[in-house]
Length: 243
View 1 (tube, rainbow, N blue to C red):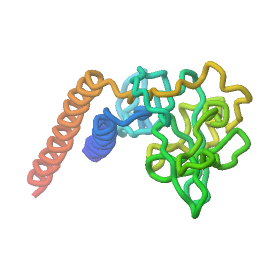
View 2: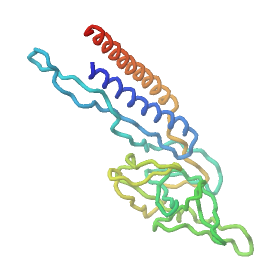
View 3: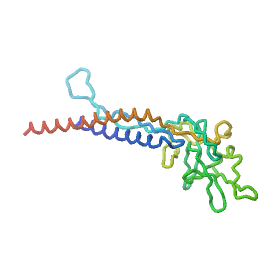
């Protein structure tokens, strides 16, 4: 009965994590450049059942979540015709400096931020967009005006590629950081054909798939709860019989 109890409890925990992941994907269905997270499951340890059979069948102890990667497939693009919006049409990511740390994103919703009298290309959250040398992109004012010159930004914006971008670690602000599995960031020397100005990449969340997964996870959660309840009821029955 204890094995059934542990199996049911682990199933509840694993499917709750899966439901939380689905909720996060759905919440970001309108977030530009967002890449949905995937959760995989793996069986916990098995051991031999104490039964008199020639095959020595195994019994399992439940399930756990083991992989949490991202789906970096190319998403559809939205045309904005705004000069500070950029969409990537290949595999690389933008590099962003936030509080001295470097993160990476597919969200090209940029704007102009001021640090004293100097203008910089920044993200909507205030992070500094970097060039291929890892330096902040400084914007100069047009002579005789207070307007910044944004000409040639497509050639100045840095793009960075990874061996396995799906294994970048997601952090706050629609950013990712390097992990051991993703490999190091490598600057792309030539942006030609990789950037579109005046466009943004839509969220990679497929709402229909997420709803289907939600139904599946709900059923699995209900089944795990039933296993847990049944194990508890059987334990109570056995306890009464011993009295």
